[in-house]
Image (tube, rainbow, N blue to C red; front, side):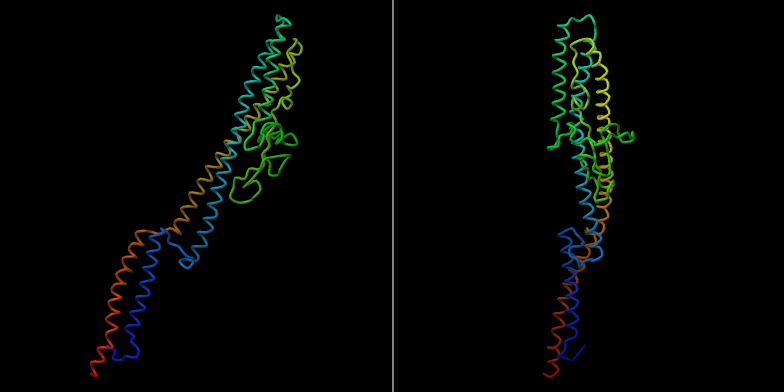
Length: 299
């Protein structure tokens, strides 16, 4: 035992041990209360940097997934309008075939033409008014400026490009900003009566009815091409979302591994630090009594 009183080294050592135990206890309490292993930059500077980059990536993928869902909703809106247009075109073709039959009277054809024209007008109105969040989808305002003949994309004025073509709609479905990887542009062909080439049709006589049949076949084919394009884009975007979900899940697992607290380990650290604090305080009290013991030597 030291018999010096100017410097109580045993007390100083006990104080240092208590300070260390207090830091460990504070850290364990902070981690247990927050659920995070890294609460401050000094807890793990390298781990913090890595986990922050992962968190940024996760946030980006989350928003990209939302974007893809918005895009799917837009495509579904357009496809729903086309399903109604489809009914109108099919009925118009049936009327044209009926009017082309020579046994009908002029009055019969005039009556048939009234329905024919109303169907055409309604089809045109639907194409011009179908919109999603203010984007008119089938009026031709987002059609490709030039016809696309690549069958891997779609025929006609539907298109997917890496550069804006005409008034294309940008689909940003990635966490970064790489052209063709994180975003691309989509064109939608116009489906108005004029776009489909049926705006001037009538079935008032056998000749015009006969001509209308052929024009309506072409219109139906064009409509089917666009519906196929919309369906393929929805399928593509659904796969995009699935891939984003998988990436986000794995990134979240990595971020959790770095940043989240292991409760079993932290509870063990808390118990250890608590015991050391208690024993440290007891030993400090004993160390502080040493000068009094030394004083007895000169008493």
